[in-house]
Length: 215
Image (tube, rainbow, N blue to C red; front, side, top):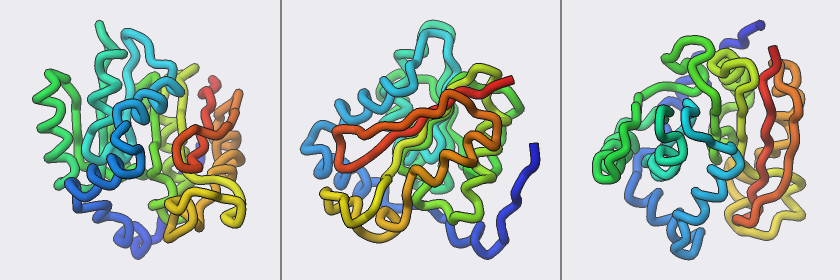
């Protein structure tokens, strides 16, 4: 499977991530009307987590989703999270400790995850791909394919469709407005995913796309 390295300038541009964890959590709370837990549970439902599953949350941010996912993988499963922001990860680790969740949080780029091949059953990218330069997204999907076991599942959640038809204000501005999740369908198929399906979520104009690794 061919890899697609990104230009160093673009890698540097996206390397810092989001460095305002308190503001990030506050904005999610506002966007969800205080129903952040329900939002995360809906996203986890898409992954179909089962006891014993090994899950990686790519761009895990402050860890809310990883912490919510951990009980569903028990007994016998694991959850890991990667993010490029150490400030976000520090908050994520505190949340995990408070919840009694044993989660492996690491500072890493989505295009260079520090795990061996076939390490996971499930990979999730929640509102992450729109922040990654276009030239690096294919690399991230290729790495996801490498990390998943045969039959493993990938779930992408992000903004999609023509920006003129989007209703929620969060979907119309900045990198959100410039990203269309449907553009990831071809890379998924080319990197060896099958059963690729997509649909709309009930949360602020977000869509999902998921597939299964073949071979």
